[in-house]
Length: 139
Image 1 (tube, rainbow, N blue to C red):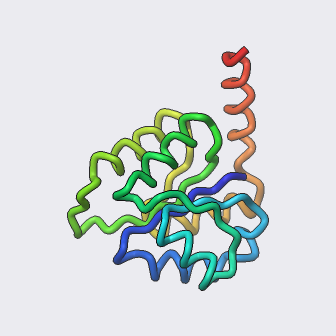
Image 2 (cartoon, one colour):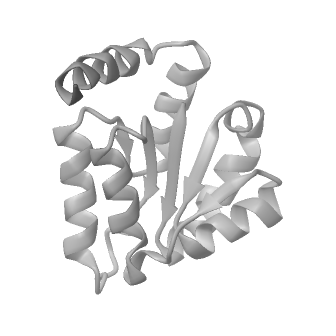
């Protein structure tokens, strides 16, 4: 599975702790992340992560494009709902794309844990079905 990991500044520590706790699951998948988050995941959690730009510099849009291309299967986005984000339209667009393309999206640690446990138990077969049905329209 291709998993995108994103965290607002005040939630980065939470995502790092989450990644450390579930490293045994995450390390079996292809991971990508926005700028600083990706760097911290590599350094602090020991995970191999493809890094995109920082969210405000276009990283959320880069991941959104991958969602639209069916190249992301799961998004763990630890959002800070109490702090205004200058790139809020990009965040909204990313979340909309996840909904449009049927990509599971967790915006907090509790939801992320449910999704990661589902991933561990092989409950994401529907993503392959979605990819196959999308592929037939590409020909």
